Image (cartoon, rainbow, N blue to C red; front, side, top):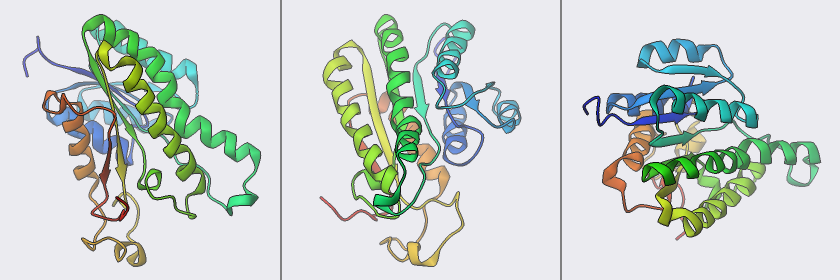
Length: 236
């Protein structure tokens, strides 16, 4: 990728785990990155990847606006976005507080809503762009262990489909990746046994899937929920 064709991406929650893996995969294929995280570790990651770092909270609309505007100010365009978020609270389904339900809305669904508002006009003006939102296998197969994630990541799928209906003809591509059990957490044998492959996924595998979905090779993939779960989800 030459300087004239180098693509620009923003990545949220990029200092560790799945967001870091995705950022590394993009950097390895030549993307220029603007990264955001609450953690000061984002500065080290930016140094590693030759990227720009911003400290900010994924639930803060002003921080998301700063992230997009910084990329535009520095590079004049945004070709891709990886919207990675934190985790919703767990708990017994009917004992979860209203506060936790609202918190899950803010951390799981609203970052994609808010960044889509910011990015669709950019994509329209420059002739296209792509978003990948980090979801979960629980969007397809609800799990009582992850009740809030199950509910709001299914909502994320619906929002994504509506975005494609409304804005695909303006150059928007938006897809979600739905990881299963990944090795950014310690392996629990009971969970590994649920997976036909018998193992947790590697975060690098997920990162490379995301990099593909943002690439031109995935240009006709739109509005899809891509399971990266080793066959964990059995539903059709």
